[in-house]
Structures are given as structure tokens and as C-alpha cells.
Image (cartoon, rainbow, N blue to C red; front, top):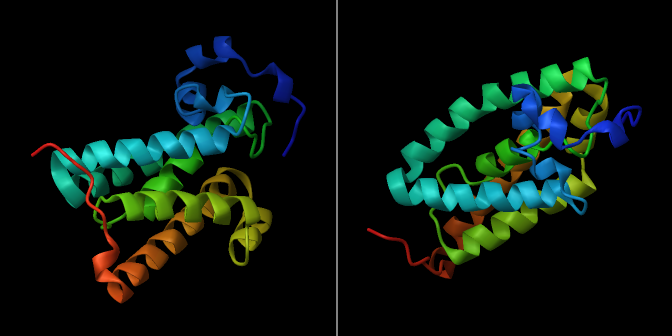
Length: 174
């Protein structure tokens, strides 16, 4: 992480649309664990979107959100020379959404999906660490979280196949 401008990101910067998106509408300015805060919101959005339109709506949101997040991260990380700054959390949002692709909404998948994604993102086992260290620029900022999300998604699907009765439904409106 390049910290040359790290102390200079503030609420005034959110007037810039790219910075607003890259910081997850300001969630990245959280003084404690901004990536975790952004992942929590992303998981909440997943539940809301799923309740409105199921997996198709979630897939559409992720497909539209990913290129938007990439452009926002590319503009802010290069213009301000921020690199993978802790305030830039759009990558966590996209990665968390990818973790839940085609996963049914219930308390178990919500909890395990969030915890697994955050653990992988923090610990960065292979190949996540390789992507994080070898892929430059906005691609690297975004792709390590995409890999975390897809790995989490695969683990959730495997868990659902091996233990199909584990799910505890959320009380969603019909």
C-alpha cells in the first residue's frame, strides 16, 4: 500500500464520483476495519437483492457492479497514487457479492460466506497472495478479492452439497 496520500482521504474527496464509488459510498473512511464494514454492507445488499429477484438479480448486480468498481478503483488508485489503499473498498464489495453467486440466502450461508471471505482476504493464501503481489494496478486491487469471492463461493456450494440440511432460512418477505 502506498501511503503517500493515505491521511489525505476525507469526506471532501467523496464529491468525486470515482472516489465515492471506490470507497463504497464512504464506508472505506471507517476508522476501524473498513474492508470488513464494506463486506458487511455487501452481504446485507445480497440479502436484499436476493429477496427482490433471486439469483438472477444478484448476478445482474454483480455483473454491472464489477466493471463500475474496476473503473472507479483504476481512476482513484492511479490519479492519487493510492495503490490498494485501505479506504478503497469497492473490491471487497464485489468479492463479497461473488462469494454468494447462486448461493441460497440463509443464516448459515450468510455467516459462513462472510467469515470465509474476510478470512481469505485477510490471510491471502495462495493463489490470492500471488494475485495481490503480481497483478499490477486496479486489476490487482480487484482480482485478489474476486479470487477470494470465487473460492468462498466454491466452498459454500461444496458445503451445501455435502450438508444440504444445514441451511437455516432467513425470514424474507414474499
